[in-house]
Amino acid sequence: MPALIVAATLGAAMLAGSLDIALVVLSFEIVAIATLILVGITTDVSESNEAALKFFLYGAAAVAIMLFGFSLLYGLTGSTHIEIAADGRTASLAVLALAIALVGFAFKMAVAPFHMWAPDVYQGAPTPIAGFIAVVPKAAAVAIVLRLLHGSFAAQQFAWRPLMEALAAVSMTVGNLAALRQTNVKRLLAYSSIAQIGYVLVGVAVSGTDPAAARAALFYLIVYLPMNLGAFFAAARVEQVARRTELDAFAGLWKRAPALSLTLTIALLSLAGVPPLGGYIGKVLLLSAAVSNGASWLAVVLAVNVVVAVYYYLRIIARMYLAPSDASENFQRQPAMEVALAVSTVLTIVLGTVPDAAVRWVQSAWR
Image (cartoon, rainbow, N blue to C red; front, side):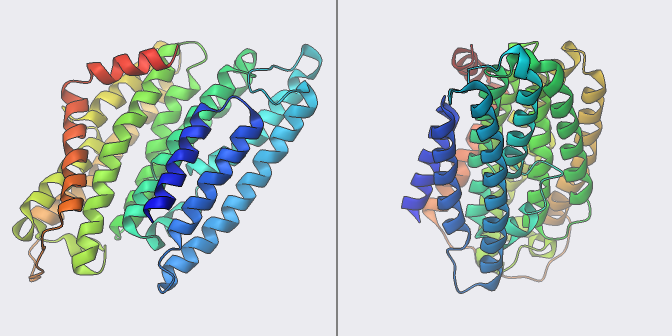
């Protein structure tokens, strides 16, 4: 498993830094194959096998659609470099090629309405792996989408901005509304991740007129990494002991595992955007970017969705601290998991209280 995680991470890093369509496709496939094996690695669990099959089918469709868009773009420009723009005669066809390629990336990022695979896959996959695929491949896909939009399609902002705004609004709304009805924490976090990528796309959508918006999206991805992994790692710890991730398994958790309850609470509050945690700073930057660049309606949608999301995050927290429980599971020490939870918690707090270093790093990385 560690080798597969390293391979997927390397592929994601290559994808984020690619400037050539061929390398983008190669990196995309490295990530896809490694994560597919990770999802189905517990071959004796039927849910894991089903999740792997769905992940494979939807992933194959995403790659096929993306390749078709890229092949059309290559035919128009005669180059595989992502910063080579189509000329005026073929600009409209280039926009069509972009839209087709973006559908493939939307599947990878689980952006609504291309999200249908995510809840089942996240629920069936091993919980730490679900956290991994909810963060790393998405971050890499966002990075390469930003390169495309600001490279070959910088002059077509009039076409792709409305598309990205619509995807952002739909994704965060669908994700949050669906999460309200979930009783399984892994499935709830899956829909939460769909909403979270919608927040990121707010910054992507308005980045054509303001580089600060792209930096806000990248900063939110940095914050999203520790707080989302922290939530999934905590859920994985509960699953190890209780053998399930239904909400009832979290009842009275603070009495049995106070440290674990605290780390999960911090992760959930950050995902909800409660100050002074990292998620709050990220959402403020995205709201400011939307308002500053003429997308006030999108800022309103984001703000409303943040309020809606608070409810289902607080449901888990309330269950941990207020619900009675007869469970007597013994949470034995697991140093590796405890270190992972501690690191994610510290980063979530630091990125909210002293975000300057991360902001400066993003500014130097995106120029």
